[in-house]
Length: 224
Image 1 (cartoon, rainbow, N blue to C red):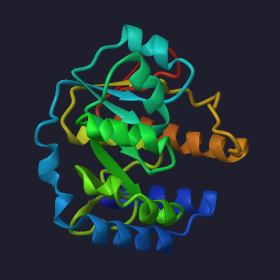
Image 2: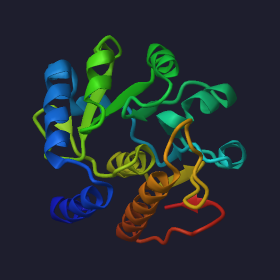
Image 3: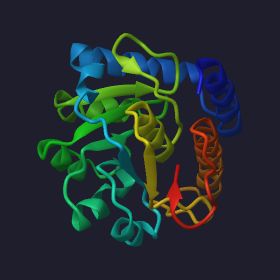
Image 4: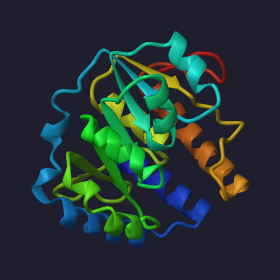
């Protein structure tokens, strides 16, 4: 993924879902000010691995974890409670702070690195959870990167985690708990909007797989 290609996707995603790119940038500035120089790429130095498990919250996740094994795990926050019940603390949690904050706090205290995303709809959550943000946190954006806020590409927590795994140099990215046809909805979540998000997540993962010289299957073991 190049910045130019990402910006093309980002513009289309924002138009499709009615996101404000300006608000995304303002959220990035907010997170940048809170994190300061604690958000730095050197936090990722210990996380290179040949195979990285990226964990989403689809119903298949427990079965996928039982048959797929990576050298380390990057978990989307929606999957974190179930993952921690089945496994332990993941190495990395990718979150935009709309998951179970108690579990995110527990994972952080247990040694997980938090990769916290800023976008226009979560500025209140960023302000509210500044104590959580005082730990080991790397800030990300889908807008223009700042000196301490990075854009590894990706849109939802799940596909963003996969792009992070690619950045970390994984030879194999194993996608556990990914289902693009049957959304696992949070209480009160709009199904049609979630389906649109999953459509874009699939497109981005297909792009990532293609860039890695692989094809992403529609069913079965999703390894890219």
